[in-house]
Image (cartoon, rainbow, N blue to C red; front, side, top):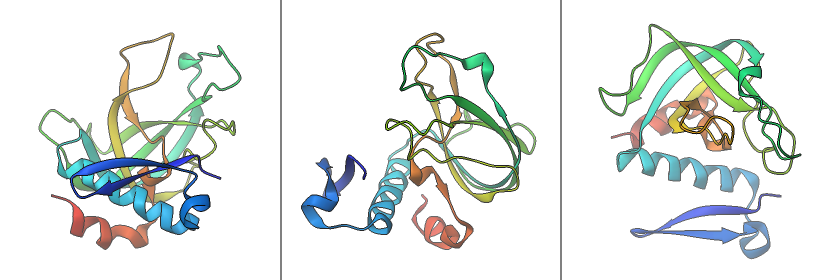
Length: 166
């Protein structure tokens, strides 16, 4: 069960704890709310690149090992072949050639179990944040990442996403 979900209420954002207990929302409804929130963030200028891509390979990101607690994310990096760029936040966001390296958590810990787990051959829509990774040992490392369910979408969401991009 997810701990919380962000809701957009007019021009405000609210956090609701245990939405299934409060509103009996299904996983699909919560996923839709989270995707809409991510698309809203893009519309107000979040540093995001939205691409259609295929995962070519996945390897452990041992250079990011940060095992300080049982809640560490166990980082991995996926090599993603970019098939199409749906949105690029700005000229500052650089997409090198047609390959991106995307960091994600492989941990099944309570703190990370909802994080998308990529595998070679997977194809989908990636809403990639260029964010500082939550690393205690390497502060200030910015990388493309997918850390919440809304950041990796199936291909059947393509039109829905395109209609909502700026």
